[in-house]
Length: 409
Image (cartoon, rainbow, N blue to C red; front, side):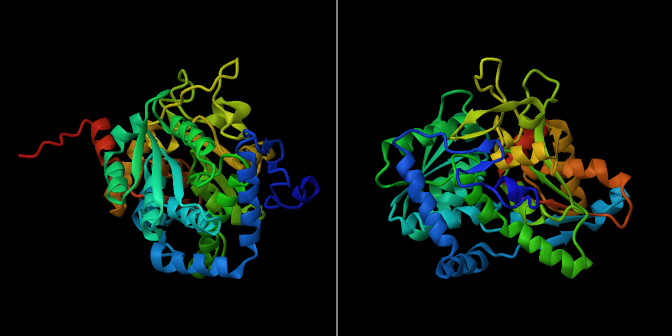
């Protein structure tokens, strides 16, 4: 891979699942046969036209793809600078980008004759997507969710239960996404025969980062086509929020080799990256280490112990980042920045008031950065951000943060 990467940012990973120094397979001996079996099944599926025919049909007729590319006229006028577009993946069935990937993984699970699906979830969107597709195909679904996230994402917990999933609150650690993923991996080790682990982001042991990226790259492929139709050219700048980083990698990947396109990933700055670990900006405040089966940038202390991050956004509240993002950071191809909770809340309100779109807190971080750069850019500069989730799930969190009175007489 190393030679190919001199000419392409889309050539990875290599045969061992590495993006430069990042990625790989750091798993127990019990799980290694399953990982190798999954890799083999995915390699077969990639060249199976019937697999992609089924995926295309489900994306179109079940998910509702392609999602619209929307020109934000009022936001553009408000910032009086660059033209702002949104790739509206919040209009997908289940309200986020997560289902793009879940469909692919569960089709693989069916090919492997796995009847029990487990998943981790933070904001609940991946859990809802997994429960949804399991309901469609009649598969048992178990979702691990941090107890803290169960409390702040109650609407999605109810949705998962309506769809027939068993939701298991995880009380270890701080009860967030990291802890949910820990327990899901423990489940997988215990139930290797009939269980398929559906990972929701571009993290985990190889082949998950590559596989999730490939399924999510439908976002960027559509954006390329739609931007040509609407503007006659590629966007100048791409912006997306990053926790583990699947929505961002989905948008970025088809553009990585077009060096004229500037690419920006937005991490969760929490209360500020200079605060005492009250953020989840792994690339800004972290360093390389191993977690959840892969080597990447992590928030950790001097002894290598993983630190608890913080973000108002449950979906960005993860102390690591996907290994391909870590490599893109070190290579300099993608610029990674951070946005605070306060800035994200301001962008959330602005989007509601000016565009009539209630965003999730995750893409509100991306929009907040768009608001920082758009006024400084000329009117013919085109910014495209990924509106990767809708905000129904976050209204109570936002109301509490804004001290909004929810009592109505």
